[in-house]
Every structure is written in structure tokens, then in C-alpha cells.
Image 1 (cartoon, rainbow, N blue to C red):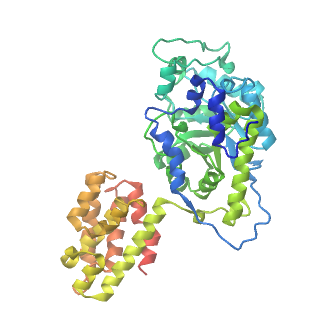
Image 2: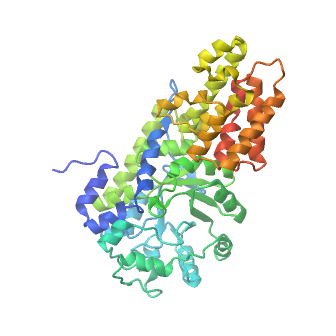
Image 3: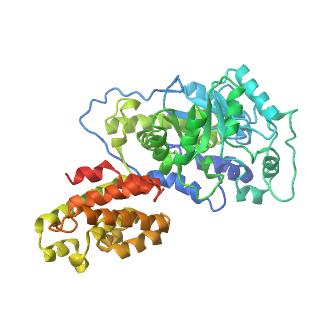
Amino acid sequence: MEAEPVNVSEFQELARLALPKMYYDFYAGGAEDQHTLEENVKAFQRIFIRPRVLIDVSRTDTSTTIMGYKTSAPIMVAPTAMHKLAHPEGEVATARASATANVIMVLSFNSTCTVEEVASSCNAVYKRREISAFMVQRAERNGFKAIILTVDTPRLGRREADIKNKMVAPQLKNFEGLISTEMKTDKGSNLEAFASGVLDASLCWKDIGWLKSITSLPVLIKGVLTREDALRALEVGVAGIIVSNHGARQLDYSPATINVLEEVVVAVQGKIPVLFDGGVRRGTDIFKALALGAQAVMIGRPVIYGLAAKGEHGVSRVINMLKDELELTMALSGCCTVKDISRSHVSTKIDRLHCRLVTFIHTLQLHRRIGDTTDRAQIVGSSEFSGSSAGDWLAVVVVAAAVFDSSDEEHQCLMVNPLAEAKEQLVMVKWFPAAAVTAVVAAAAASVAAAASATAVVGGAAAVEAGVAAAVAAAAAGSCKDSFLASILGDPLLYAASD
């Protein structure tokens, strides 16, 4: 007798065994080298949970409200195409399982069941706007609650497994009688040929206004990965943002979504909901995304794998596994409700960088108190600092931020580089434009020199504070437009550490 899966990932192997290779590869594959596909999952492993203890968690509740609708958990079924490739009942089975679990399902327009057969939400704008308008009207008539516009598909990503397999897609039921979906090509998959005929490379921000004008439903956009696009989304009045890289199926080497979630959350400042999509395989992943500011997460491939392996029951199992794991994670972390999950419950790579910089600034304070040049150099571990300027000290802080890597002990020693080397390191790692590096370090060094009195010990905490302030000012003035650098230098922890 076949053993039941004990976690969501085990459904993937069952799906692989159940599906023809062409269809499994279609669901499992990503774009090009599949770097982002792998990184979507691995990035979660670099985030650690900070549990609280001695809290009464005898009653825990995973329920929440999404876009005004009460759900059993902050979990949504992501819009994924062509469920009938996985199971004969297709999206209808997925919708039934979602309803049973009391979670929201998002229906892709590229579904193999019609809008009328499934009630949830929908997404897509096609080249022929009259078709998009017609689909939106059908969604409204059938009780759909929101429109989700996928904004990262002006063209289809290069999915090499589909090209090799000459992927053959089934008829898309929503478009019967509207457009032909029977395109054939000898150069790759017919899915690729179909997409090239319907996806609109001219889709832009002004089209959000058009979409809002033809529906009374809230419009969310899916595919945002940057602060800049999040702010633009606020400007055009979307009802919500979904941080997503399309399951790593579009642009390879785009960032893992969990790595940019907080950037988007900070940008919107709670004005609209931020949802998360990409790489969720565990309840701990959901917990981490919520702690970083997501209102809910979407799950895509795990649902498909459950559907392929065990139909509607498989989808229900996947959803309930994630809910149960989330509930356990909440209890072990001291959170009785979803609202109790906070930013302080997780530690990211940036947080660990802050801790090291805070420790380093405390070391600078120690240097100021010791007063003996030889002892100061000995503490740092290099005699290079015996004649360093105040600007050198500030540059060390900057370069420590730029080259930080929590998994590489070799970087622990980089805090001994003087100014010239620090600038070279910053340029070398290519995180920031060379001109911006020069501008920030120069502005900071000049401010430090001006702030330090003739009798002050070189590298004192006050001088570092002045230099950090100057670097932040330079970033704000446009000398350095890198939001990461500005956030590192402007973090209150740096100032608090030198009080």
C-alpha cells in the first residue's frame, strides 16, 4: 500500500510518477537556467525564526481576513494554468478543495474549465481588449470578487523544457469561440506560439486605468518585485499588490520573491494589501512571509502536484498540511493569532548585518575610550589603522555593509581596510554604481573630518555618526540611489548602538 505523503514536497514525486513527462516538465520547470526557480525555495532557508517562550498558546487561530473576506488561513491558491493536464476534473476539483478548506482560489483565464464552472478570482489582459472586457464581465456575472492582472508577461519566458518537449497545450475553455487556441509550430511548443499571438507587449501603467474603468471589482496586480513599481502601483490606484516572479517562469536571475517582499511592504506603508507568491513549501515559509509583512501567501505548484497525485483529495491535503504546519509554527513561536506574527519573529541576512555593524560601532567606542594607538590597532587586528583618518573608519562601516555574507567567515576580516581599499571593495562587488560609491564615501569622509575636533580620537563614535548621517544625506540627495545602501546606513540600530 502506498504511503501517504507527510509533507507538501512529497507530492511532487507522486506527481512526477503520475504525469506524462511533457506535462510534469510544464508544471515543474522554470525559465532558462532555472536559477530563480531554485532560489525561490532556498531563500527561505536563509531566514530564521525567533521564537518567544512562556506564552499561553493553548488556543491558536490561523484565520484571517483578505480583501474583506474571512478565510481559514492566510493561504490562497495561486492562478496556475491548465489544471486538466494534471487531472480530468481540472480547476473544478481545485475550486472544490479550496472551498472545503475555506481559502481563496485565484482562477487563471488560461484555465481548462470555464469561468462559469469555477467561482473565485481571475487574471489577464490580452491584446484584444474587447476579449479582456468580455472576460471581466463574465467574471462579474458569476460572482467573482476581484480581478488580478498579471503584469510580468509582456512576452512568454523561455521555458526550455517546454521547447524540448514540444509542449502541446489543451484547448482553453474560456476562449472557445473568441480566439483560436490551436496554433501549431515546428520551432517549439504550441503554448509558446499561442502566447506570442495573445500576450500584449505594449501593456503599461495607463492600462490599469482602462481595466478599472470597465469593472466595479477591485483590481490587484501580480508580478511586482521592486520598490519603484510598488510606488507606481499606489499612484495608479490598484487595490493590492502581489509580490511574484511568476514562479520563476519568466525572467531567470530575477530575485527570489521572499528577498524583495519587505522592500515592497515598506514602500506601500500599509496603504494597500501586499500578498506573496513564490517558493512556499512549508508552514514555516508562510510564517516568515507574514512576519515580513505579507497579508497572505499564494501556493501554486504544490496545489498542482496534489491535484496530479490524488485529485481533489490531494489538493485538500496540500492546503491542510500547510495550515497545520503554520498553526504549529505559530504555537512554537508564541503566536496565538496571525496578527501576533511580527517582524521581530524573524531574522534575515540584513538583520544579521545590522547586528555586526552595531557590534563594530561598539568596538569604535572602545577605541575612543582606550586612547592608545597600538592597543586600538591590536583590537582591530591590523596595524594599518594606526594612522587612519576618520574617513577610513567610516569607509570600513560602509564596506562591511557592502560585502557582508553571513555564511563566509573570511568576510569577518574585511573591517580592517582603509579608505582606498574600501572604495575598491565596494566597486568590485558591483552592488552599487562606482560613481555612487565615490560620492557617498567622499561625502561621508568630508563630513567626518569636519565633525571631528582636533583633539578627538580618530574614529570615535560621534565621528562615525556624522559620517553615516552624511552618507544618508548623499543617498537622499541622489548621489546614491540604491535603496538598500540608504536603508543600511539609515537604520536606527546604527544610531542606537552609539548612544
